[in-house]
Amino acid sequence: MAHRMAALGEDFALLFTPTGNELEGVAEYVEATAKALNRELIVPSGPSLLTLIDKFSALPNNRQRWCTRMIKIEPCKAYLLGHPGSTLCVGLRADEEERQGMYGAFADYRFPLREWGWGIKEVLAYQKEHDLKVPSRTDCALCPYQRLIDWRNLLRKHPAEYALGEALEAKVGHTFRSPSRDTWPAGLKELRAEFERGRPVRGADDDEEQEACRVCRL
Image (cartoon, rainbow, N blue to C red; front, side):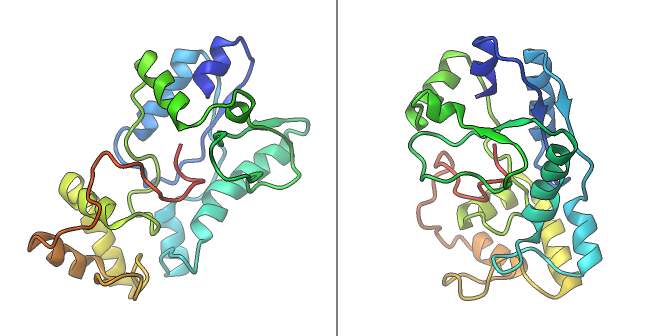
C-alpha cells in the first residue's frame, strides 16, 4: 500500500508500533521501506511485550488480549490525538470482511487498497512486479493467535524465541495457548515434545497465509 501510494505521488509518513518481540528482519524491513520511499518513520512511545508480561505476571491469550490494546492501539491513538487532523491509512483489502479498524473517532480514515479494488491477488502481483520481499511473519514471535504450524516453525527456525516462550510460561504459570483449543497440549514445553516426536500438523504448509493477529501483522 505504501509503495503504491508513493508511486502515485501521495505525501505521507509511516507509523510503526513495535512490540519488541518481532522476529528478526521485521524492524529492518520497516526501516528499509521508509528509506526506500524517502518517508518519515514515526515510532510512538509504548511498552514492550516483555515489560507488560513482567508487570502483570500474566501472558496474553485469547481471553487477555491486552497486548494489542496496550502496545499497538493505545500508542497509535495517543499519536493521533496529539496530531489532530491526521488521516490514518489502513491496509484492509477489498476482499476482506467489512470493518472500519479499531482506533475510534480520533482521525479520518482511508482504505487505499479498497479504493483501488485490490484483493490478495492484486497485492501479491504488485509485490512480485516490484520485487518487494515482505517478511513471512510480522506479528509477535510469541503471538497467542498463531497456528500450530507457526509454533512448529518458530521452534525450527527461531529456537531461542521458542525457548523464551517456554521460560515465560514456567515463570508465570500460564500458557500462551488456551487449554482445550485443540487436541494438542497448551504448554509450549509439552508442545515441543509433540513436535520433536514427529506428530503431524494438520495443514502444514510453510507458504500458507498466516491467520494471526490482524492488528499486529503488516
